[in-house]
Amino acid sequence: MTSTTTQTGARAVLRRLGRSRWFGWVRHVSLVVVTILVVEYVVLPQLVGARQDMTLLASADTLLLVAALALEAASLMSYSALTRVALSPVGRPSYWTLLRIDLSGLGVSHVVPGGGAATVALRYRLLTVAGVRRGDAAAGAAIQTVVSIVALIALFVIGLGLTVPHLGGHPGYEAAGIVALAVLAVLGLAATALMRHTDRALLAAEGFARRVPLLRAESTGRVLRELAQHIARLGSDRRLLRQTAGWAVGNWLFDGVCLWVCLGAYGYWSDAGPLLAVYAAACLLAWLPITPGGLGIVEGVLVPALISFGSDPAVALLGVLTWRLAEYWLPIPLAAATYLSLRVSRR
Image 1 (tube, rainbow, N blue to C red):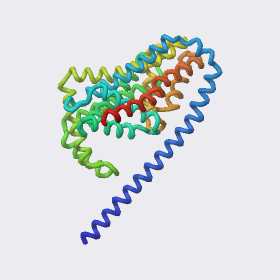
Image 2 (image 1 turned 60 degrees about the vertical axis):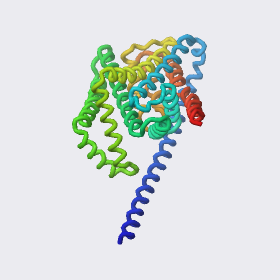
Image 3 (image 1 turned 135 degrees about the vertical axis):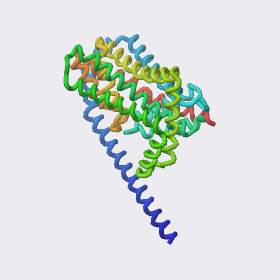
């Protein structure tokens, strides 16, 4: 009887794993197809249009382009500073090691369709190899992700607030602002519930994990408990809270100003409000697991929006592509170099 029960349970587990692998295979193939279609029908036509205005490249301000690279470097460094404050001081690697880990993960997210899961897995492995406790690595990554999203939504709301008085009231702007504020409220309520009712939240999360393939209830509960401790640490340490919020906002602001400077290098200086709103909206869409790093989606949102704000079409296109060169393409070879350096340093 026991043998029969064991065999039945084993077959059930194998069937669940088979369905999970099949679903994962279909998902990855679908994402690759979507990526190819986006590159083929969105990115390449934009590049062809840019070649018709190559004379603009010769007129670009070199000093501003150098400043844009420096701003993008500051954005990446701010993100690693956020990683540092999100982790517990016990067993935390050096800032230089964290910067290389973050660059390695960023490169993966830019080449793998829907690469968020792959990035999380790689950063988790690299952090644990560097000496970070498993629970701390997972909870720190969760804190970092949530704070980054909150900071981006806040910048979007600020951008809308600066834009609406100039463009007049519009139902679309109002709806977008309400949705953004609602998301912030939900995140705040979730954090409050986790803090005040930790045991209930853990039981609910563990029960949910038991129903989801490839999730382990014990691991989920352990990560949430670590997360609750991290949130408590932020709530009790005002200085740490300011640092966390400051580095998260700095990461996005440096990147947004880089876009602004890239446009300025071709002669177009956008107003701060509209650019901030559309930049934040494009970055939020880039989080969707559709194409690597929002390839094609970000460009498809930014270029038409900038044109509607008054930019020359060629300037908007070249400015966005120049920014994406620094923000999207340049980190890929840097990620390969930093990953190799981490492998070499472990030997």
